[in-house]
Image: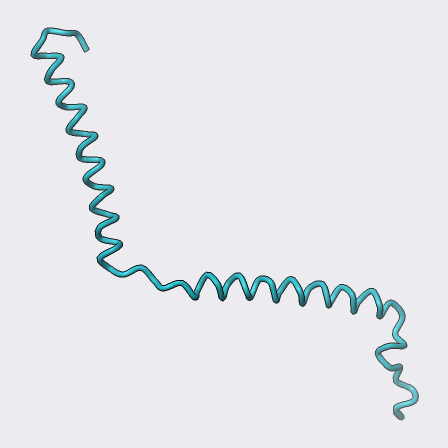
Length: 82
C-alpha cells in the first residue's frame, strides 16, 4: 500500500467539522484543568481548624437544646401549659 492510496487527514470528508469539535473539546478540557488546578492549589485545612469548626457546631446545638429545655422549665415553673 503506497502513501498515495491513503488520503491525508485534510482530505477526509467532514474533517473541518471534526477538527472544530476537537478544538472545542480541547478548550473545554483546558478550562476544566485550570479550575481543578486552582481548587487544589488552596492549602488544605489543618486539623485544628476542623476541630474548632466541629466544636462550634456542637456548642451551637448544645446551646439550642439547653435553651429549649430551659424554656420548658420556665413554663412549668410559672404554670403555663405546653
